Image: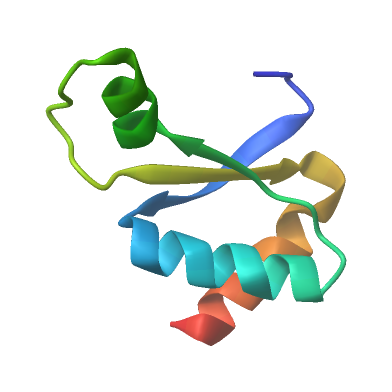
Length: 72
């Protein structure tokens, strides 16, 4: 992953997709990394089901973390 991006969330897909929606509503374009879906499409299993990571550009990290904290 490009070094200009930073991980702001890691957790289950339901929460991740809610966070993704909130970020997009606030003009932040997140990148979702879903190892479970990637493994499924490749025909493999994964030891951590439902693990999704969200990355944002470093310039938007503070705003993204603030929005995520508001959701919790």
